[in-house]
Image 1 (cartoon, rainbow, N blue to C red):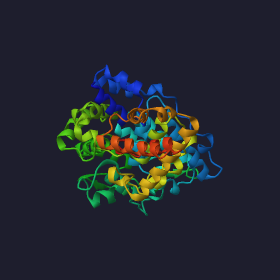
Image 2 (image 1 turned 120 degrees about the vertical axis):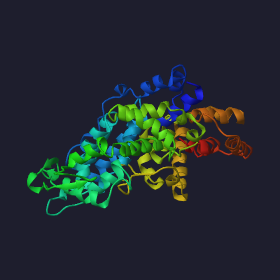
Image 3 (image 1 turned 30 degrees about the horizontal axis):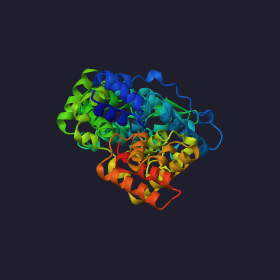
Length: 428
């Protein structure tokens, strides 16, 4: 790989930039680099806080502990792409914890998403469909033959597998009937299918008449008449997360073919994304604003701090992205969704916290004794920014020079803050 390609790949698949990883990828092919980044066996087994996996205690405190643990895992695992994928699927299969009974239900769904991220999309769909969190959030635990509830069936077709135009309102109604009886038992603790609550009658879905059952609807979508539409939907969403939104049809074609040939294997799809020429093109290089979680973890990583220093869980909500609390079943979007006056003020507050903690820890203090251009270059590399634009470099240099001319005691903290808020640090 070219060095610029390696830098781009690491930035998109990590939360910070480890220059040693970049150096290692320069000497290998794209496919070998992707295989290395997808080697999740190097990551320790997830071990969320014990109190977040059991009942009892205060749910809010348990979710906060689970959130901080996830931030810490994003920051520390050798192969952070595993957590990027968990974050992507956390938005795709969005569940707001406010509607759950216990924190362990959120932890259980996250575990399903993480474990399924390199398997088949079929298996991931089946697993999420019967998770207590999903059954509660989209009310399928209330879906009975005599009282059908369409919430899960609607989101399954609209948000999880297809998009409007690939199904009808009638398909939703019939899919809801198919999912009747698939609910919860033991005080919402486990999935249970109850035949007496299931509508076993004939149903017409996608023009196919049979006595449909819920899981059969998933099988038909991913492997039957809606097979290609579903594949294009999933490929487009993953590409939009890692490369740039709204890819052209020819790029999606290139991703869908190997994915379908491999039996809807998500590892194959990810490899197709990360080895595609367009992933390394100009559009992809400037195509994404870092989401709040991504940016806050990157700042923490580059500053050589930990989440107990920076406490990102206290800031990302006002930036627009609270883990375990997506506002709607659509999950989070990208780019423009992260840009607003309130969000930028919150990013500025967080950047200042990072700068303060760096100052306390004496990390990078040598820049105060370096010439201005050298100090800015030290900041660029320390913050994991491959290239600063002439405009950004000049702005940081002018800020630092003005601080020195005024004899400011905040020279170091202000220089770090401005660098963290630079356009290049905001981009993934």
